[in-house]
Image 1 (cartoon, rainbow, N blue to C red):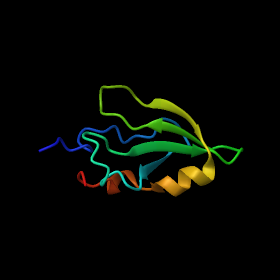
Image 2 (tube, one colour):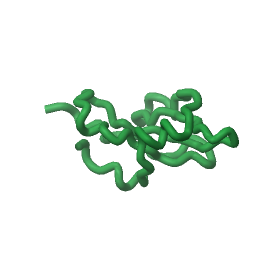
Image 3 (spheres, rainbow, N blue to C red):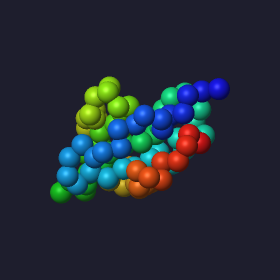
Image 4 (tube, rainbow, N blue to C red):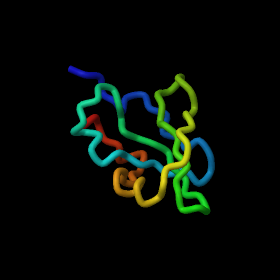
Length: 88
């Protein structure tokens, strides 16, 4: 059985304004150990600055660049850190 991808994640936002988002298909893609979670903060341009959610002790967060707003919202859904659940 695969490890729970949510176990041990650092669920503290990296900076002010970041919210947690999850890939809409993360539970169905079958990527072992991937939580599908990202921190995202809306920019003035309408895009989202994204950072990976990592495990405790790996790093605080890993910058992932800027994702176009409409495309990001099509593939990701806003979630609360408490609602990440057990690995789907």
